[in-house]
Length: 258
Image 1 (tube, one colour):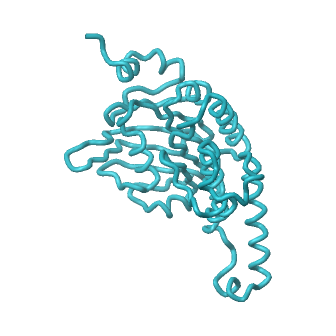
Image 2 (spheres, one colour):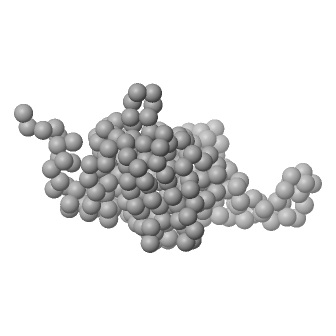
Image 3 (cartoon, rainbow, N blue to C red):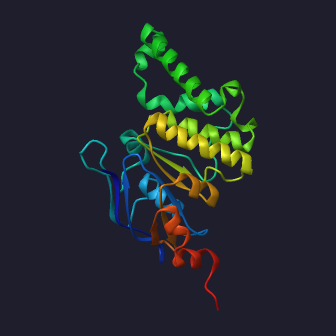
């Protein structure tokens, strides 16, 4: 059963077409890769789905519980409430906050106490704060950062900052998780560890995962289906074996023979 459908999605910036008539269907529980050369429109497509940009035309339809929800043009906070979470190509942590607080802050949308309880420090406030603290620690433990909970986010090594972004995204209880170049800047061992972690997260939380990545070892070892963009257009889709043997994909990455 499809959980996300993208229909003829287009985004123009002035006279530049960044995404052109893209169609995608993502099934519930899928682990999908989105690849393409630099400037192909991958992050723009993520930004359209998650509400950072409004599409010029086309539709984005989310169907989590047999009820279609139109996401096109909605605000990011509203889309997050429907069950979407993401990480970013350029890390966007709250760098002056602790590792723990970076995760706790993502749970704000589900806080169950009001302003009155917070000001007067009523029992409901402390009960909810304990729940948030416990859940944040559990997520940090899953991504291997529990021992770093008191560290400022800016002081973490690059690979650990990537993991913290994933923990923060998970804190929103997503149904669909978007990962924008999660292995960027990692060494081969870190990439191998991340590959295992992403697979474990899908199983543990029942996630549908869509990721952008340039590391082909991660994509080919992890993703079951792959979509390929070039100059904003979808040029191929299929299994890893189909994609790596696709002539259009080879030409997009390596160029055509003169």
